[in-house]
Structures are given as structure tokens and as C-alpha cells.
Length: 492
Image 1 (cartoon, rainbow, N blue to C red):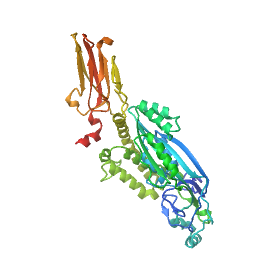
Image 2 (cartoon, rainbow, N blue to C red):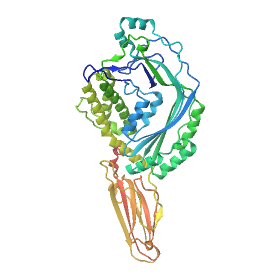
Image 3 (spheres, one colour):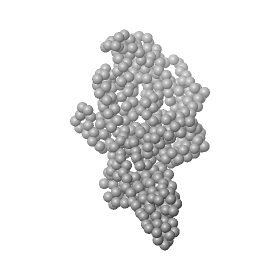
Image 4 (cartoon, rainbow, N blue to C red):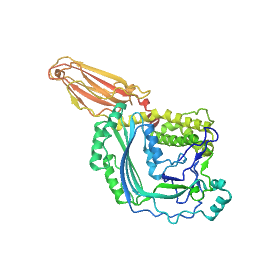
């Protein structure tokens, strides 16, 4: 759509394509005018349009794994952002699932799409024509036509229905996440009953916590509720396929010069600046997804912009300010590259400051909601969970307790109970190691009194063989409750 003419200077202009296909349907109506710079809606310049949807349909099923900012950027550009500029909050209804997409050192999002869409655009008959008022303005002031009617009009669309299942996956280590990502890469049928069961089994064996969500558009009736795991998704998909009521999904925009070639199809705008402002729209959407995925505690935390802005003192203040700045100044930012660069940098810095918080929250969810499997009993030294993490500024601590006894008639026994020290109350257990001091079957055995990982307390019982002594130590790895600041606020 965009191309350069001339040398890189103030004379650069942006050429507007005559037709834009496959644009997200952003709360449009047929005939609506669109400003190519801001994405703002304009007065309708054409006579009423009533496209006639076709009968042929295409059904497409696809999967995406979103684990990096590049993954998210590619998805956003395809699903929510047209080739002309759009505001940060603008996204098609069928792309509303983007608010559920998160990724960090310890989390990623898997998306399963099921689309039923027209094979071609709805037919137009008669061909679009200007209203008398628009025709008069095109004749008398073609250069000023866009001030009233914008640059494009919504001519037609592909109708369809969309189903998106979102699987937000979190674990306790980066290595575990990468292993899980590789394991699911080849599984392309998680929307089926057997595929969903296999996916849940893989997540469980990989100590991955999965949160599921479903978004749909282009249906009639009330969908069944989403269950706690992936096994509920196939039932909802079946309901979806039985209750289709297609809506416009992908738009075709036509430039007014296709109706009257006197209307200019260029803008005195450097295409590089245009691309820069489009990037800010993506950055704000990424920031919105991030802040919606972490505890509200973080929105209340102090934050200062660079340069500082009076009255903007918290994360929530800053996010709202940056969003408002983009929306209010989008038209001028296109012609002010330095201001656009500054705004982009400010959004990027806020997002970067919050990413460790998302990684920590994903880690916490995995630890408490889908903790690693723990053995229940044994004879030799055994470990469970984790004793270290790659997360920034997170240091797992260790405490241990020892028990030994000399020979006596009968059995010797002891129960290790964590926390060992009352000052550790509220600490969250990340792992443990029971150590057989003799490294021998003659040392007796141990039994867990229930799962400990992800909890604030736990105990483990050891017992000697009959008429024997024993030597056992329990090492517990934990994080103080203060590691997870939203918990401290909840209980204060």
C-alpha cells in the first residue's frame, strides 16, 4: 500500500493503494468513510451499499504459539491492524482474544482457530457511486474531499464465523517451558476430544499450568460454559459449528479515486513516519494484554515517565496517559517523527518494566495451581520441585532439619514439619530434598504427609528399620511470601 517517491526528504509522499483487501472488520458499516492517517471514521460519501454474501464457504483450522514479542507483533498485524493506521484500542470483534494473549520467561500462549468464512467477497450491485453532495465536492474541491469523507470507504466484506480457543501455559522454569513448547509444536488437533486429552496429559506430565478461554463471533444463541481445562473445548466447538450466524469479518476498502480519479491518492507523509506510528498502536495493545494478565497490585505501583509528567505517578496513570496521548495526537504524530519516537520509547519502557512481573506471576500460578509431581514415599534420597530459578531478582532460599538416632529396640521415627522456623511462616515451598544419611536400605524409609510444593507448610515422616538407628535430613526450598508482593497486599 505504501511507497516512496523521490529522495528521502520533506518531499516524500505516501501513495495510497486503490483497493485494500483483507482488512479487519473494526466496527464498520458498509459505505463508511475511513481516514487513512488516523483510522478515524468519516462521513459516508457513497450511496447505501447492501452487499450480497456468497454461498461458498471455506473452513480453516490453524494453530499459533505466541512466546515472543515478534510472535505477538506478527499476530497483531494480521488480526487487528489494517494497512492504514488504526487507534490503539481498535480491534475487530473476532480479534478480541488478543487480550488473553500473554508471554514471558515462564509462560506462553497457544491459540487454536476455527474459521468458517465466505470464499469470496460479497457481491456489489449496482457499483458504488457518490451521493450528490459528495459528487459536488469531488468536482469543486477534490483536494479537500478527504477532509470530509476520508480516503477510503468500506465497500464489501467476507462474511463468516470465528472460534478461538486460548491456552495460556505457565511453568516454573524457562527450560521446562521450552521443553513443553517443543513437545506441543507438532500437535495440531487439540480441538478434538482425543487431542485435548493428549494435550492435558502432556501439560500435567510437564508440570505446566494451563488456563483456557474461548472467544466466538458469528453465532446465535448462548454457548455452553468453558470448563476448567482443555477437555471442555471440543464440546464448545461442536456447539459453535451448529449455531453459525455469519457476520462481516474481513473488509475490502476502496479509495475514492477509484470512483473519481480527480481525487488525490497521495498524502504528504513520509512512509517511515507512518510505520512508526503504526508500531505505537501495536505497542499499546501489547501493554494492555500484559497489564490485564498480572495482579492489579502492579497498576497501583509508582512509576515515572521520562521525561516526567506532572500528575502521572503510577503504572495505571502512565498507561492511561500514553493511550490518551496516542489517541489525541495520532494526526500530528504522523508529521512529528521525534514526538512519535518519544511516545514509542515511553510505551516500550513501561512494558519492559512490567515483563518481569508477568514472569513472576506465571511462575507463581504454575507453582500453586499445577505444582510439580511429588513422590509419596521411598527409601533412598529423593528430590522434588525446584531449588533455583532464572527469574530476575528471585532467589530461592533453603532451610534444613536433621534427625538421627542410635540403635534401640523397636523403631525410631520423626516427623519433619516445615516451616522449621516460625519466622518463615507464609513462605511458599518450591521444592524439597529428603536425604538418606547412610545411603543404604538399612536406614529405614520415609513417607510424605501430602504434597508440599506450592503450599506454605508441609511435613514428612521418617522411620528406622526395626532394632536399627537412622540418619535423615530434610532440605526445603522456598520463597518468602514477600517475593509475591500482591499476596502481601491481599492479607494486609
